[in-house]
Length: 184
Image 1 (cartoon, rainbow, N blue to C red):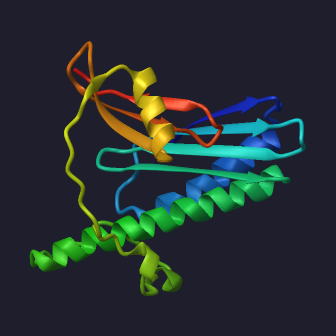
Image 2: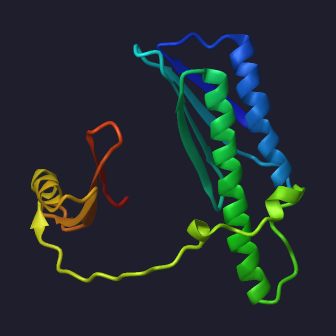
């Protein structure tokens, strides 16, 4: 894995960089082959003495992403690595279940620790519990944000009136809005 460690409002010391790379590098043990991925680590420090770390690891069939807030940057790194490990275990379980159902004996991930074989918690079981169907009204993103806010939802699907493509607006954790539009 190649690392891109950046800092916002914080100087990335060699010790902090080394700690982040060492901890995140331990995730490689879960893969059978060497991971050819660019690891993006964004460390932030806020005026209220809170640290935030965001880690994104884009891979061929999977994007691992996690973020964590904590008073201590080193603790935040530990917490984000734990989240990424849970994502890998969850994905591994899902992939291996499908492979077993298809009769394939090959496992995608290796070097599993004993706690990794623990049964998944109920919340880790994905299941569609409700399906909605509706017509997409052509509108611009500003109107879609208004509709989303009126409904009290965190996202809203709509057809862009200019491009006639399906888009999604969503409310970000920072209170601002995001727009997802298809790549043409």
